[in-house]
Length: 139
Image (cartoon, rainbow, N blue to C red; front, top):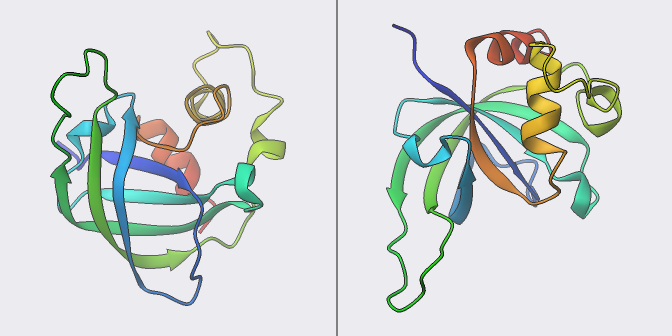
């Protein structure tokens, strides 16, 4: 069984850093299952002026954010620390994934477009082994 892979789409402020901390990040598509040792692909949020896929890393710490009492509907959130392991050599972002919008075609590009660009919010989400293999070709 292989290690699960995840994607985080969020603004990346310090591109020189090798360790990143992301506090109370929204999770979707199984993102709340993220744990230390998991591979994560970092997308610099294009909603905030970023460039899309920027780096790959490994999660060194993950902790669920406690739910707020008295609030009925809450999106699960988690705080993670990531050590960068590689920089992307090929661009992969909204422009590259936008043509893949046949949600039922089973392509890894379509999965990434559906999970991370159909809805504009920044988030952590789980991806399939096929989507992770597709992203690996960018390194």
